[in-house]
Length: 377
Image (cartoon, rainbow, N blue to C red; front, side, top):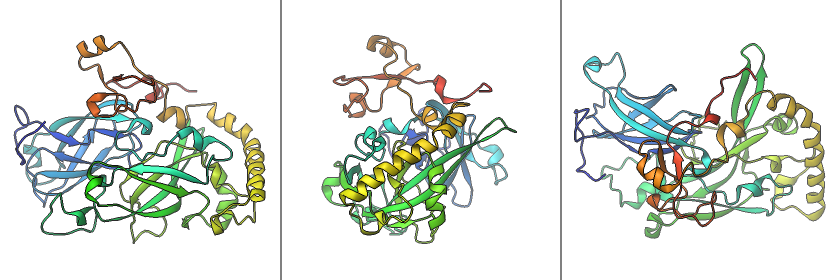
């Protein structure tokens, strides 16, 4: 949709609510820009998500609000409502703008942190000491940039130091509430990267290789690295601007996240100096391989005892769903199906990994069966 910039208090007709991006990662950790009603800096605005948590918003300018999305474990379209928060002046008189956001798993998020072949991160050992990552630099802006001339073409807007963080996930079964208690924790900052601002990076991704055996900063103490670290069964990467006021990794700024990966490559034998120098010799590599095998065998019984009882993180966020129908049916049945974010020419992305060689692929626009849990086990 192309229209003159601005805002309107009309909630219907020719001035619809716009959301960018409207395809987002279900793990949250990111923001969306909303263009709807005319905004007052003195008021507080919220983005209500259908049957989920409310997203808080900050006024960016009179036409755009930036909303911070929570985790929404649903694969499909969610109706969202944008309005002034109740209790503000004239909030009762303002009607909500209605829009839609399509929540997808991290693997098919168009604006994702690409980490190469996801299966490589589950191998023991990891195929290479330096692993590839890539992202589009124009998806980041400097949070401290307060220039009066807020020009999109101004390269200073995109000059920002980025931290690559490892977020660990673990779940503990709670018999009283009959469900798992999820916990997310920032385990470490792997490295610091500089967002490139060259003119070619308006359309070209920034590609880097990271040394997985060199940790820039741990957010676990030595005891936690020898014991608590093994309770985090999966994790994911997050690339975000560095917050100088956060020394614990709790208050990370919004950024890009990757698909879930195994974090066994962070495991080290007690007393090992694997992450001190950054290089791993052959003997240390063999010791680490044997240690990972032994440690994985020790927690195997606990793994099946808990994850076999109820849904788990991987099933909650990733499925093997592909095209739901033939293309002719998808074109006719509007509203039920939408183009696949990773396998459709509509999104200018034909790097389809689900069905190799396909030019177009479609997904159900409704929530799929793996997106929620309704039984007792």
